[in-house]
Length: 109
Image (cartoon, rainbow, N blue to C red):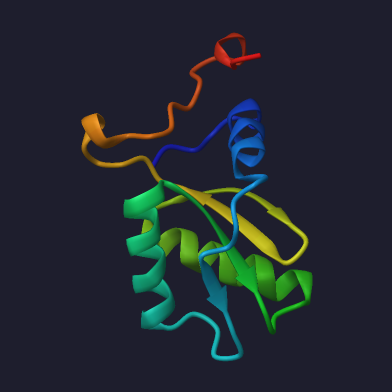
């Protein structure tokens, strides 16, 4: 997955504002079940929120977020509080729900 530019991350964070977290990271951290759950959610929604239940320290959240990003080949659009926002475009272009703007001028008003 290509790295997103700042305006693209901001656009995705705006889209994620009203969605609820679909994946929760508990005391066991990153498990196969968490990764599988993220894969399914990304395939279904493209843009998801992951909530950290037990990991409240910034360093541990960043490390876990990076591991999840790598294992799911997604992009970390941002972190807000104890939530991380991930994006991965649907592989089938016909099924894509989100169109990430190519330039800052393409962002809808």
